[in-house]
Amino acid sequence: MNTSVSSPLPCETYPGIRRLVTTEGTLTHEVGRATLAHAISRLTARVSSIAKASPVVLESDSGLIMSVHYERRFGFLVSLCAPGDIMATVLVDKELPEDEVVCETPRRAVTFTRRSFVSERRAWRALEHFAELGERCPVSDWVEP
Image 1 (cartoon, rainbow, N blue to C red):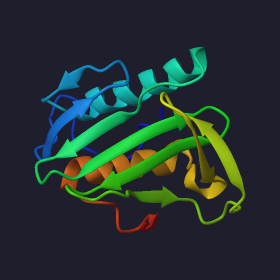
Image 2 (cartoon, rainbow, N blue to C red):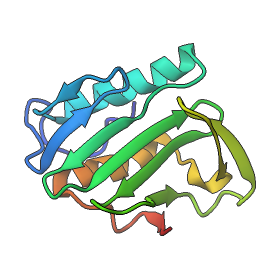
Image 3 (tube, rainbow, N blue to C red):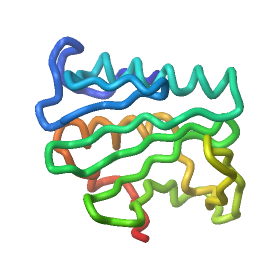
């Protein structure tokens, strides 16, 4: 995992995060950088050993939800959803093609554009910004529904 991004010390918690749900379904209310890094590494390890895994989910105090899926062939799928919204905003890599790819989720196969899957570095930057400020990272590229 890329841990070179500046952030709070591992023992500090992110004040604006209400809870974290790991890929194993564990609910955590005290979320810090080390906890988040461990959850993401468990997600990638779990997907490496089985075909599909549940996402890691962060919820801010405002109710905004960030969901992180991992697909071993393509990378990370990061989405944000506000309370009451049906569709989520998705983090994209505009340098990748818009070709459609099929991604296996725990419930079904879903089609996404290739650019919807981002590198670990981009995903981590968006995660940290969300964890620290409870909002989407403004320097990242997001696609609205």
